[in-house]
Image (cartoon, rainbow, N blue to C red; front, side, top):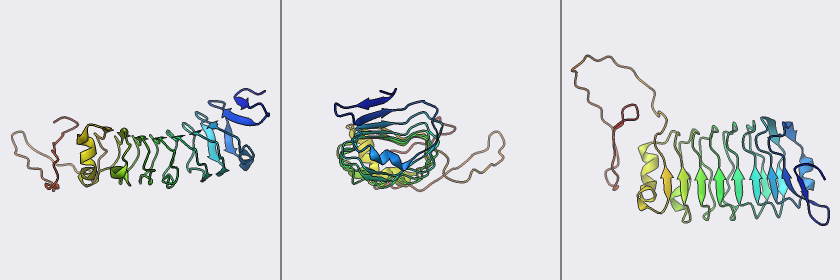
Length: 219
């Protein structure tokens, strides 16, 4: 046997646990010969910058590509049992549509450069996109089994957040969404002590939402 490699009774590889092994370069397409994989964990290999497209893995449940140097996600083919996907702490700018992965329960994609949240399967429970560049939330408002949503530190506006206000206020989902990064171009003005400053914006008053001004993070 090899460290990090688990075999079944037939001698087939079922689990690859190659976390923090100083892997460098890319994972070749030969990975697709291991169709019996249940878990593929390649996390914390900073020298790993690419993974071949994953084509046909009927038993794969856990895919962990976190803490590498990926700029693109591998294409995900037929992986009907994918339940856990970790891709945080990379350099990803996008994630493909995941709506077809109906068994996916956990998606962690924190600390990347992702601008648009992908379409997600209806039964997903945990979604974490903290510290990206999100400007849209895809179909989050329609995820009936959602239990945790973390979207802190993105570029979402009032208009993006208002449609999910009922999730935030409903009590059944743990939602962390503030603070957000600056959305508009920062502007500097000079004032004198005692000056009156008036700041205004347009919000959707039709929704049952309370707005609060923050200055440098304080009310």
